[in-house]
Length: 515
Image 1: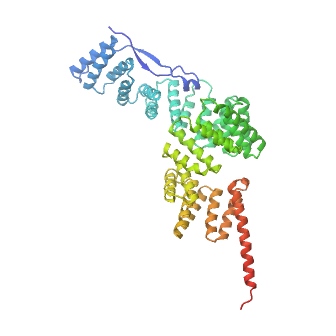
Image 2 (image 1 turned 180 degrees about the vertical axis):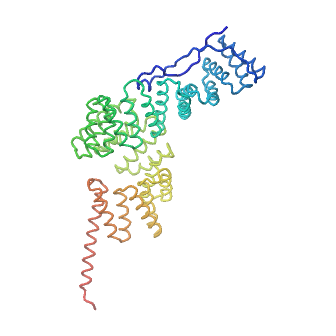
Image 3 (image 1 turned 120 degrees about the vertical axis):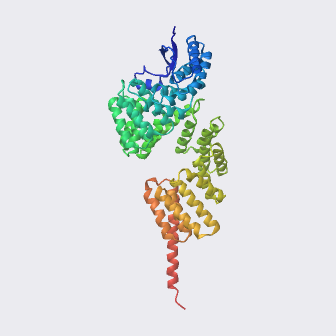
């Protein structure tokens, strides 16, 4: 006599839309009629007896007893797919997920081509937060035998795998998964899927491909607001500023209370030198964020963004106050690092230099691998000619993470210069010039040109200094109000005055009659 038993499979065969692919986590069940136990010739009598005992205990829904016998049977036949499946079913019925996962993992190795095994195991890993293990099993599922797999279930596996890749900041791996779903052509509106591919391309820095996908999505469904926003980002990165502004405005017509869009549009208008419009949207973003920050569920990133927008409005003290309040709230170590780093920047900008080192050390305490904080603290010491050994170590630590970061190269060059000034060594001065020149080639920045000019100036090579400072002013002329450019212009004026004085002295010396 046989009775039906339930094997739990986390499948999503009923999905009909892209949104369901993302959100539906319904546990589906399949009723299976167990076959009568068959004794294999190659297994021992003891193993067969244990299997039979387990089988009849399972039929009677005596799950604990059944599991005990199946485990004993498995000792005699460790690669039996049938025993593994029955044992897993027992542990699922007993709600012993850890044991179920353990033996499901063994089953996935035994039957490496079974889509359902890998897919179910991946779902369990994902649901319990084991993302790396989930990725591995989804990958194995997608490489297994899929000829008879329901199209929607396969699409769901691909979608979940793509989502996990994006969570791990690996958009280049997510894109092929999403494109494979397009090839499957599941029923429903495909515009959202093209939008997600476009978003992944943006994350990967491939803006032309992002634009192509997003424009396809827009044609399929012109009323999907999020497509407009990401299309605006793609247009902005491709230098199509007018199109970017138009798309961002279209998005805000449908979603007027989205502060990120107002903040983004403010930046676009600032690039277009439409300051009135920029101020308008920055103000709206600030107002919306202030409401959010007053709520308990606001995020650390929202506090940081609000502080940055207030800085852009030259409301530095308000920005400091927001971040000081944020620092007192409980948060993860990563968030704590970001808050202390932001506070350090604000204190630096408001000339509260005594607080800068403290906040940067707190940021590094929260996250020792916070390379931006390492570079900032190293540069901060170099500016003051203090703790130069530690300054060099800190900047070199940052460069291990991003060896071609122009700002970090500039910091190291400036540390070399300060050490050369302290030690009076020409060798370190040459190292400083070499490193700063490398920084300017990697990422031209007015601060780097300023530093190179200052080294030449300190060496009395005034023409070289004038050349570097002139390059900065010419290359960044649209940033005439930039504080670094202002300082460079002041230095150029002083240098011109010195050159005039030098010329006058030279003329006077030539006029002195020889004795």
